[in-house]
Image 1 (cartoon, rainbow, N blue to C red):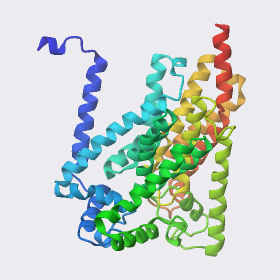
Image 2 (image 1 turned 90 degrees about the vertical axis):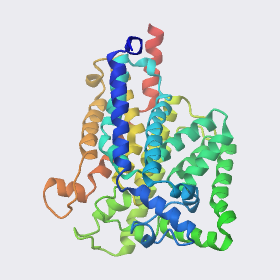
Image 3 (image 1 turned 120 degrees about the horizontal axis):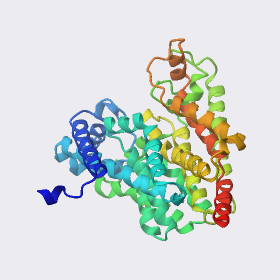
Image 4 (image 1 turned 135 degrees about the horizontal axis):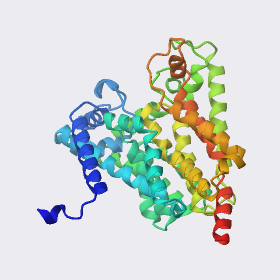
Length: 421
């Protein structure tokens, strides 16, 4: 027994305790109702030949994922739901670990001290702690989506194109949100990866036809498209206080507190389209030239990917609060940039006025991302922030901070510091 405990540091014991707490938390959440029960209900409906996109068949909660995902889950419906949900939650924990490893790889972490690295990890996640907990409460697929997107880009960028394209094609098929990374691959000249991803999307989309028959498969495709069509009327005017995306943000200015439009639907839809186009075009400000070649350096690519994930939350409809974990890579970029800049010049806040703006905006972002409430009908500050989507405003401000922190500024000064040393 003495050998078992010999050499264990306080940090190691803390890690063991944290793992135990995470396991207990996952077990507790797996015992309760969640969105994963909806996915399993959709799989059961698929086996019975019903319509999984009819909320009456999925615990009165709409199912927005692909028929292929339901088909994959079908064998697991014969197991206790607790076991399936616990396995998925533990996989989500692995995804969080792997997400950080992939994000961290874009940064020259040697520029940070050991203590700064620890705080970098803690702060980048802690700001979004509420959203992390929301994902575990709902047993969501968000962490898988983020991991699959990052892992696929990493695999394709390192020459493992087939595996990367397969993973990205699978993620896009399950939940359309990672599709922003498809044009990114073409922009970066990853033609083989882009076309292979398209091929895998098609394969995963049509694969259920082999098991379910062409007629049933075609019906499911039509129902799926009706459910996820981002420009459909049901996704345009989002008034539910739990949605934090551009449709919900714009709708707040065109509806009453009760959710009724105060202008014509056409005017509202035109405004929403223009706002969406603005953030699509804004992507070009983050994607550095030249086109059809690799990013200039890992730090630049880290910022590009961080913005694509951030834009995903804004552009797609029906984004619940748990989707805001997509912001973690953007926060990691900002905090790395500030810490590395501080190490270069401890008076940088005084010498560079833009860093003062960044500090003010970042504080505002942190406050807005932690706005929690349900009521949109009051006149108090919390109700107004909930109604006008304070979390979404914080997300847009974070996009602005990314623009204020160009990779070239930091890399030039790091290179100069190394030469001087």
